[in-house]
Length: 188
Image (cartoon, rainbow, N blue to C red; front, side, top):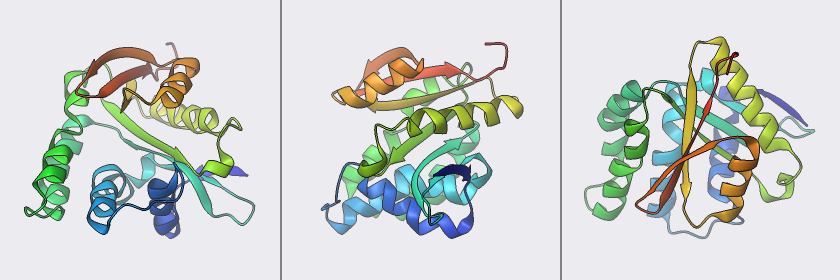
């Protein structure tokens, strides 16, 4: 197992992990499309240099940490290029995609970057999540990004426990999500 930079050949494997990190995905096609559009594709297509994968012994991605380094750029490009991919005939998913990064906007000065992390179930609880987070924070520190944040479902006690144990600071709960942030600077 290794952690390495994302490469274009990882695209489909990362998308698979995105959909199946909580077990086999049985969502309808429109929900899978919404998940990939909202939580995966922007990062791989627009900021691949801020993405890292956990690769198995066959060098296939079985986990990842993906990141947008600067909120304002992310929001502009997401609204212009990714939100239109969710059909207007699916207003519930469009509204959720539109509001999915609202908490990031509130904290963008201290935590301009935000991340998503997922690992397939058979590779979870082995320390890989912490190692992926270490790698991303090191990368962000080297590129001058002061902090990174994330949101997790308020009821996701396993996820919240991981982030708190790792050192993320709880920021707030809002709309069913809990926001966390952590410094990336080498001095902090």
